[in-house]
Length: 155
Picture 1 (tube, rainbow, N blue to C red):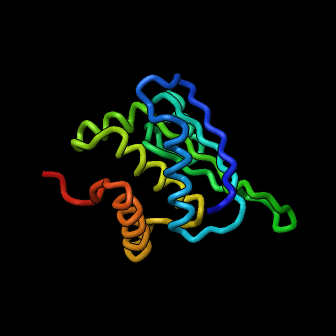
Picture 2 (picture 1 turned 90 degrees about the vertical axis):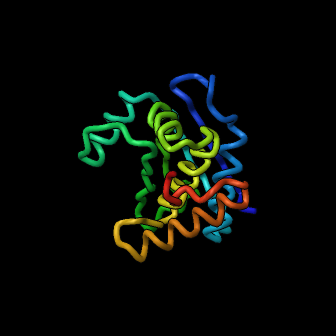
């Protein structure tokens, strides 16, 4: 297993959120699924809709709160660091989506954390082949947690 240093901060408290150890489990699963063997450091911020919206607007030019944002670390090649980046998770959006999609909140958090971690590792879904590759890996990893395919059509 990868040596993981994880920093988690919730700006909204912890009531109703998965335990920090769950975030660690999900990130470690994503690292393993992506075959990362090096020491890894990730920062996770769980935040409200206002901060989520500001981050999405300021860094992506999209003026709305989104479920998870990934900020890969960009260091010069000569700087060696295990830090691969930061995740910002907007709790109200994750909760709303879980309810709208009829998913357990914990399952949707697992998906968002795995999804965001894969982005930090270079996975993307901009074009169809990359999206299929990323979604297949997410689905496979979530299945090991007994979580249904998040991309299956909603009944």
